[in-house]
Image (tube, rainbow, N blue to C red; front, side, top):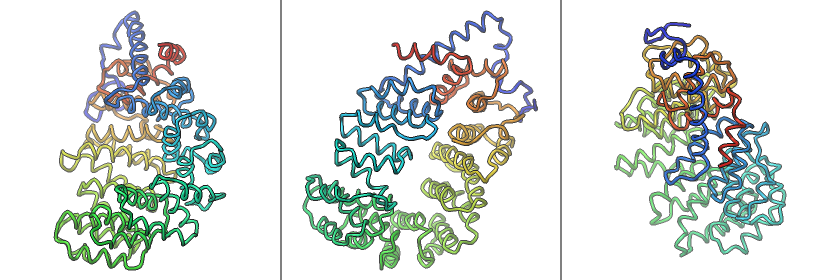
Length: 507
């Protein structure tokens, strides 16, 4: 074992040397206490709490994707609480090899609102295949509103088998939002006459009109319904349109290449002296940079505001496909939450492997810089960046992240963010990351490293098992989400999952 990077020579992840020296009887007692603590933590997942703690704990258990948790998630499926039911159904799906929703269980849900929420959440998590979506559309008892939700991704992929139900729903529905979504999808499927229905919405006196228009534009952006472009442009230029709706419509018009949209953006930017408004306009074209023209970024590059100026540099680099990574790294170092989030999504979806590695590493390293007020957000970004980096198969994330972990300048917060990101990864393995890794002087950081090892089935030494046991009982300052993961992992290592679940589910 190597010497600690803090020059403390201790066994890997040893949190308390006195614990290792306890007699056998004391350790046995500690094991019993750990089992009781683990059961207590799991029981906290069973009841909805006013502060939403149960959501965090259940999401943490779902992240383990462990089939042995099926009894607990099956119990949640029977819950009267819609939130707990959704967690149960998603947890069961995520623990399966094919990661797909169980349609039989969905059919058993009598409340159509809960059905819609479950299916929508499962679609967001990529737990519904196209074939399953088509099956759902053929269910005679499925509420039409749910079918409309299911249809959207199929329309995007041009795989909707029969749009008849959309036409019927648009004609018969007294729900303005549902009817508008149907018209939106029928327009995307090639019926130009549906554009008239959207124009009619603009003239509606319904008090929900603008809320529905926002929803329609957001749906169009999410599913890339590009035929909405002329309507989006009309809303963006509508006299008296609210700033919120107008900017959303302008974004859709720009994204889908509506004629005149770029010129409209330029006019709005040039005529607006308010720094906040100019920043919002700049962020729009940053987020749309893969589809924009270079001329949009020219006025930004001469702005005195560092954020706006660097957005201009990034946008022009993305359009030109040159020097992208250095420009984005420079932008990330400003620690602007929206800009950093965009940089992460760009690295995930559009960047070359080399650029993605550079950008994601910059987001991780930004954890220790910037103002205290958004430190928590930077930690979350570092976790997400680590997860994305580790799930790119062509990159050696373990070796790269290890170099950060062993750097004496790396803070405990940054180290924990990296380890948590690896914990959340579907594909990451800890071998290259943790082999002969020096211990940290922070117990919580050491505990996360130990948890990562245990999650991947690595055999723990007696000292390490004692450390994990102490973490389950509340030592080591683990966050509740990591502590419940430690609890389940400890039960697996000690072959007590069935015993624990029997006690948890038996009341």
